[in-house]
Length: 143
Image 1 (cartoon, rainbow, N blue to C red):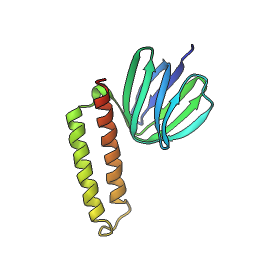
Image 2: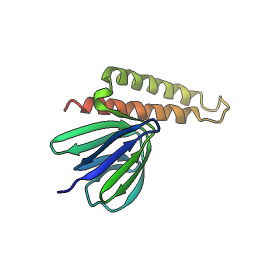
Image 3: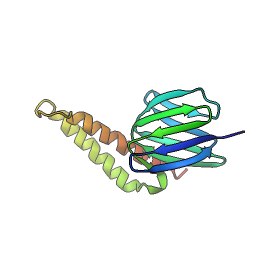
């Protein structure tokens, strides 16, 4: 069975560019499984776990938002940031998750007191989602 070419690109660099068997993306409405021959599709991505399957190997990445262009023979992921599971320190990810949860609670409690362009709750929520994605990927790399 022919594969599907996957490119993962961040503003800083190309993270991954290889032919793979399957890609599982964190879409805003849930996970999407992509196989060769998939119908063309554009989708928004949320922070979450990206799984790349090549034969018996599974590569996991934490990605943080972005878009995916899906074609029958190619998937291009444009994301704000991407980290391979092997590059994530699980303890640091767990500590970042705890801090993000505390920051979110504090921002929710102070909502309405701050005046500014950026919603502090939305910013803290985004940080929380990034921390969850990193922890999920770091822990799932062990299975």
